[in-house]
Length: 258
Image 1 (spheres, helix red, strand yellow):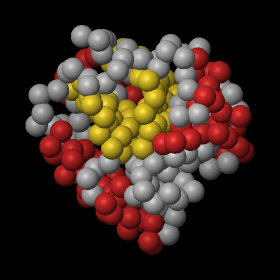
Image 2: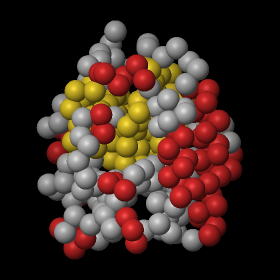
Image 3: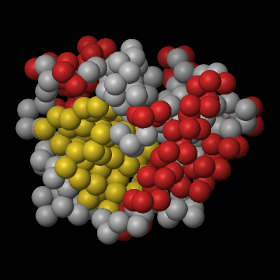
Image 4: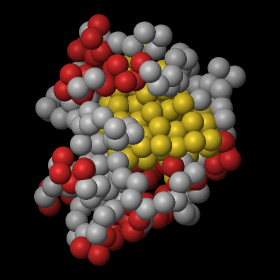
C-alpha cells in the first residue's frame, strides 16, 4: 500500500504546476492533501477528480482563504470523520479521517505559528489533538496519520538548528510535544524507520533555499506500533516544485481491502 501526503498550498495552484499528472503515475492507494484552499463543493468539480479514486474533503465552516484537507482513496472507507469535535480548532478544516476495516488513515494540518496569535492557536490545536490521540492509541486498529505537523522533531530535521531554537516549528515546547507523541504515546515516525540520514527536508521557505537544501522536515506519516515493521520504503519527492512543501511517500506491507 502506497500513501502519499502533500501540502499543496492551494490545490488549484499545484494542479497548474502538474500535481495531478505526477499523482497519476504514482500508483498510490491513498493521497492526503493539506491546505487545499477549496470548499467541499469546489472539490467535486471534474478538474479535482482522479480516475479510480474516491474523493473526500473538509474545509471547515470559517471559509477562510487558507486551510482545508482532502483525501483520495482507491478503496471506499467504512466511515469519514471531519474535524476533532472542537469548534475552536475545526473552523479551517484541519482534520479528516477515513476508517477502513482494520485501519484508519488520518489527514492532519497543524497550524503554522507566524505571530503570537497564530502560535497560541497552534498550541490550542495541539492540545485538542492530544485528547484525540490518547483515544486513538487505545483502539484495536492501526493508524497512519499523514500531514503537515509544522514541527521539526530533531536536530537532523532542520538546517542550522543552532540558530532556530526560537523559530516556530522548532521551539522547545513544540519539540517536547512531538517527543511525547513519538515516546510516551507510543507512535512512530514512518519515514525515520527507513531513513535516518540528515538533510532530508520537506519544506523550504523559498526557491533559493530549496536549491541549497536549507529547510525543515515538518511533513510526516505517523504510525501506530503495529505498523512499524510494515514500513517498506520511504521517500520525499523534490524533483518538481508543486509548492514550498514536498510530497512524502511511504510504502507499507498492508492491504486496505482486507
